[in-house]
Amino acid sequence: MKIRSLAIQRNQSSCTQKQSRQVAFSLRKSHIEHSRQEHVYSGFALVLLVVLSVCGPGSAQGKQPIRSEQRHFSLEDSKVKRPVAIPVDVLAILSKDELVRDVLENDNLPADKLPQSWFLASAIHLGDTDEIDLVVVGEGPLIGANVTTFWVFRATPNGHELALTAVAHDLTVKKTSWKGYREIELLSTTAMQQSSVMLRWDGKQYSAYQETLEPNQ
Image (cartoon, rainbow, N blue to C red; front, top):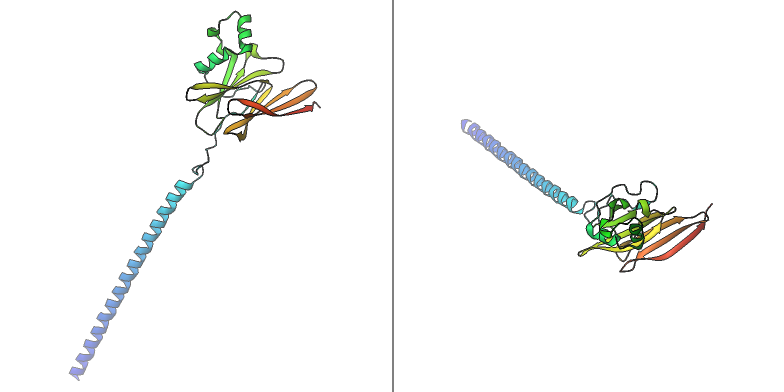
């Protein structure tokens, strides 16, 4: 009986140890699987973060960040909201303008004494590059009867080039483009009618391609 009882105790102890080892193995396996899942989740989160950083708004190729700049200029409504300094090369070109020369002669002023107060300039991006172009609006003695003169300058590696000279009441740089440059609309009003002229970049300067006349109401 003692031998049989001792054998039973030994069997029970062996079973208990075996069960303990199985439980420990199960716990260890569960811990390893949980650690693997955490590693997978962490890796997935890291990949997702990188994708969102690379493919987020404004980072896609071919898309330019939206620029906050004045696109509409008028004889009224303060004309230029954020004036910028006029570069020396732009002033030199303006001094050769026929209207500007006439006013200089009337005021007995030489070209090198051209008053900067006769102009207001605003930065604009005519194309999708980072080069800063200019819209210059005539002020003071350069203002006519319900119109003023607008000059549009294109920035180049060699300085500014005159792209447009126009007399109108309003000038608007449109969102639509042609040959890499934004289209421009000129508006004028007389006692009898309103006119709209659309211009496109032809590779050298802005040229009119469409004109609309409407009678005043």
